[in-house]
Length: 258
Ligand SMILES: Nc1ncnc2c1ncn2[C@@H]1O[C@H](COP(=O)(O)OP(=O)(O)OP(=O)(O)O)[C@@H](O)[C@H]1O
Image (cartoon, rainbow, N blue to C red; front, side, top):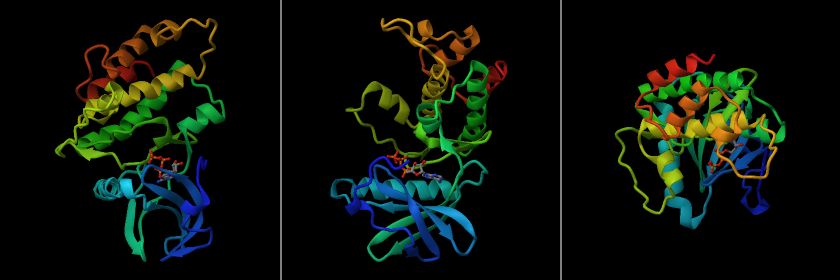
């Protein structure tokens, strides 16, 4: 869904040709660019075109994010991760062409379609995401942005998109003291940042069936009617108990709930 796309920002109109790609429609506007759905004439497949916005204050960060997404996606080959196709400079425009992944974001599923997930279903989806994240971690990559809008569900297949904040574990961390605790925990270049984000992911899935009966504010542990094993895993993901250091132990714990 296109949330906000003022006309003056929309540089490429439907039908515009960018090399061998024909713009179908904008998909959305992110922090650093506009993303379009396009048809590839050459490979007869849908692709995503990411166009860097010319926002003065954000241009440097935008270029860095594009470069990182390109570097990381080019190093990967996984059916649930978009393939990097090419980078182009068209006149003043700088674009990245990526494979289009089908599916609705988990954000759309929960908040627009009202899809409900039982405890078992929530952990089945967590397991599917973890299989992809395991592949990333084995390639020394931390995604750092595993939020609902970046996880797509297509039938029962899961895809992960948006690698602009992903980093290699040996990349140098840009420490931001101004970040609030939650953002610091999401952005640390360490595998546990992905686990922390996935703690929130699974809580969103579990809250999809929650019906509030009191106006009193309570913690998720008091509100959600879930098993003690589920609570144990979520507490460790959210670093409220000993954090998981690596993914295999986490996957083993999740398997016990399936
Ligand atoms: N490879 C892809 N396949 C399918 N849809 C994609 C792909 N990449 C991005 N999208 C979709 O395009 C839209 C815009 O994505 P983009 O990553 O540019 O920005 P964002 O995620 O909305 O914001 P931000 O980058 O600030 O997190 C989103 O709706 C996203 O689901």
